[in-house]
Every structure is written in C-alpha cells, then in structure tokens.
Amino acid sequence: MEKNQIPAKAVGLGLRAPHYEEVVQNKPKVPWFEVHSENYFDECGLNRHFLREIAPHYPLSFHGVGLSLGSCDELSSHHLKQLKALINEFQPALISEHLSWTGTNGQFFNDLLPLPYTEEALNLFCQKVDCVQTELGQKILIENPTAYLQFAVSHMKEWEFLNQLQARTGCGLLLDLNNIYVNASNHGDSAATYLESINWSAVEEIHLAGFTVNEYEDGAILIDTHGSRVHDEVWALYRQATIQTEAPVLIEWDTDIPDLTVLEEEAAKARQINAAIQQVAAWA
Amino acid sequence: MGLKEIQEQFSSALLDKSEAFSLQILPGTFQADQRIQLYRNNFYISLSEVLSGVFPVTHALVGDTFFAQLCKAFIRQHPPAEGSVTHYGADLPDFIACLSQAESTPYLADVARLEWAYAKVNEYWKVEMPFPFEKLALVVPEEWPNILFKLAKNVHLICSDFAVLDIVNGVRNDCLEDVVVAIPQQIIISGAANQEIQCQAVSPPEYAFLEAITRGIALGETSPPPDFEAFLQNMIIKGVIDDFEMLD
Image (cartoon, rainbow over all chains, first blue to last red; front, side):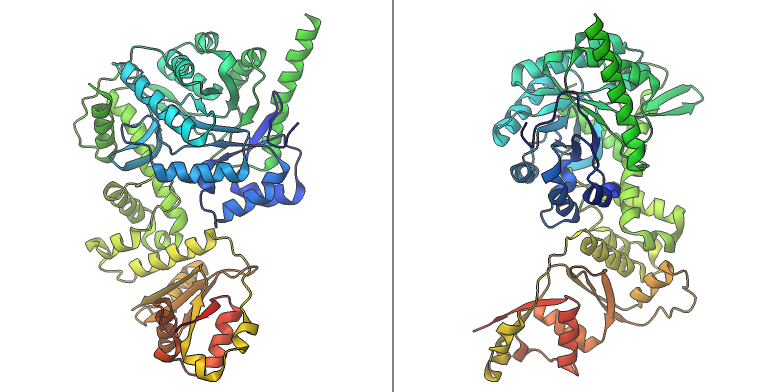
C-alpha cells in the first residue's frame, strides 16, 4: 500500500495543535490523520512545520472549511492557490469541503452556513465543485453539514441534493453521521431514511463527533460542537453505516480538545464495531 | 427568493440583530430569529475567541465585559475578508486607537500592536539562519558605509509613547502596580531558531538604527548607536539581524 492511501475502514484522528509534540515524539499507532487545510496554508508557519514532521509517517486527509463553495461570490483564487500548493507538497489521500457557504460580498462569517436545496443552488454548487476539481486535477469529497434552520424554498432533501451533486460532478461524499443525527433531531427528520437514501458507493469518508444539547424554555436544540465523546445515538448510526461502506472513519474533536488517549479510546470503539459487524457477516 | 438574496439577507441578519429578517424558514419548535441567533452567536463568539487568543493582555486589561463589547463592535465593522482566520485581528490595534471608549487607556492600542506582533512571531517557524560572519570579514573598511544589514523575517519593531512592554510583562506576571505607564518605549520582538520569543526594549538610537535598515538605508547613511559593535553582536546573537548585503 502506498504511503498516502488510507486502508478500508481505518479509524483516523484529527491532528490538532495540542497533540503535535506527542505525535512527533511517540509516533502513535494511528492509521491516518485529518487536518484542517486552512491551518497549514502559511508555508513558514509553525503548523506547516509540524505537518512536515508528521506527514512522512501517516496518510492524510485534508478537510477544508473556507472555500465557501455555496456562495454566490466567485471562488477565491488565492484560497484555491494556497490549497493547491498544500496538496502538491503533501499529496493527501483525500480532500474534502462542505455543502455550505461561509461568506458573501467579500465578508466571511467563520461558520458553515446553510444552503437552500434548490435547483439554482445545485447548479451553482456543481459549477464550483467542477471548477475546484479541474483546478486541483483531482476529485474532492463534499460533507453534509449541520443546519439549524431549513429554508421554505428548498424543494429537495439534503441527501437528494448530495446524490445529484455527486452524479453531476463525480465528486465523492463525506458523510458526517453526527450531523445527520443532529439535523434529524432538530428538524424532526429521519436519520434512517437519510442512510437508506444516500448513494453509498460515493461515500469515501465517514465522520463521527460529539454534540451538546442547549436547553431553552421552548425546548432543546442539539449543537454540533465537536467537543465531546460520540453519543450512543451516533454510534447506532455508525453500526448501520459500516455495513454499507468500506470508507475510512474519523473521530473528529475540535473544541475542548482532550488527551490523545481519549481520542484513541473513541477510535477503539469504532474498531470494535467494525470487528463485530465483520464477525456477524462471516457467520451469515 | 433567489440564492444571492437569501445569502445577502442572512449576512445582514448575522451582522446586525436589528436587521429586518424576511427569509422564509420552515416552522418548528423555534422561531426563525431564534434559529438565526444560534448562527449569530457562533459568528461573534467564535471570532471573539480568536481575538482573545491573540490579544490576551488587552483582554485582561479591559476585563471581560469591555472586551466582549470591543470584539462585537470590531467584528461587525471588520468581519473576516477571507475564509481562514489565521490573519484575523490585524486591524484591531488601529480600531482601538480610534475608539472613544478607549481614550482613558491611550496605551491600549500599542499593547494590542505588541500582542499582534508577538502572535505573528509565535506562528512563524524559525529556520536557523547563521549570520555570514566570514563574508562580513572580507569587507574592507572603506566599503563599510555600503553595508546594509538585514532584519530577520520574523522581527517586528514597535515604538510607543507608553511603557507597553512593561505593561504586558506586568499583566503576565501579575505585578502591574509598579509600572510607570507614561514612559516611551521602543521594542523589538523576535524569534530566533531554538530560542524563546524575545521582546526587548532598546534605546531610541538603537531603535532608530534598526528602523533605518528596514527602509534599506546603508550603514554610512545611518547614525549607529553608541557602542555599536556590542549592539550589533547582541542583535546577531538574538537573531534580530541575520544577513547583510553590499549596496553600490
């Protein structure tokens, strides 16, 4: 297997600054690392230096949050140029972005904002994905986001939008099971229907993360914080998902980042589920 | 409503709570504005956290309430101009300098300038650049006036009417009482390879010399500070000056 390939169903971790020293020194047995692309754009930056130390030992997945593919603004050629330079240097196994927009009219909001699922949005998103894939000379994956509201103008479900996007552009899909659960819970949708309807043959990466519950007088809302262990409900979705796909899995933890051992415990749970499903399949 | 209009209305609603919000949102347990408020909170809180991470001393000096208001006003007027927040906050010192609410703390903008410079030096990976002493030894005395010394890439200079380095150290070490604020200070922030970041105050002639070489002025055209040899050696050891070239 080549250095930059990620094994089937391998459970990777997010590489975050508090763990750099430990990863460089101890080379923990992690099958692959995910990094947030934008944090490594500066060629003279400390982050880039650590990535140069770590990259020779692990396959990588580059996960972007700032391309703003769903925005009516033009793609930032500067952002794309920096991403391309990063990819050229490190040759990651996977490259991904989000089904969202982060800014308009030159103003950015440091968040993954929701899109209306309309034909107009689909056309625009396809155009942007085509443009990025052409510029990078390779396929990218698009991740389903969390959304705390749904637009009345939407006339298709998110999974329909993603399936059509994939069919029209040849992009891959990154399925975040926590996001599916959070959205289903907040909007009264069915996570099971989502999993039954998504085009599994296009899914090339799975994300697992934790959410928090905000309580209000009117009720509760789940917030996709990536700051806790994976919840049981999301592990239940993973059991269903892992039957459908060989895609590698990421334990994603971005706020209140704990010791690496906590992330490794979560990864071990995912591996146990994989092993149990494989055993059942063998008996069947 | 088309996509562009939706995005413009959404953006306006994020930036300004009072903005009329007419987007058609599917009904549910929560009203449209409550849902937008989640995004608005995330926008302001996440960027305030970015700013607090870069400007911890400024934050400590003004306290949580003022800093939160400062961030909110700054974010509203200066939302990020790119999808990455790596460079976000560069304009905060100038914003503070123009803020009437900060008139009673005239040193605050320069404290923020020092913190911004510190953050930038801290983010930079320090590559060892040994000073070319052998090359310098080949320069004959008649040619010395044509020497242009070079500051290392990760060096910042700050000139203030206030003792901002003493203020920053006072906050960090929790001993602000003895700091005499109204003393001008000239500061160098640098980060040589394998060394902690250095923030050091220098004399006005030393600062003037360093500032002159950033403008491409050769040794012969500058006024070298007293005891220049020792000063130059110190700057080289600390990685502030890491190269030179000969001007025609």
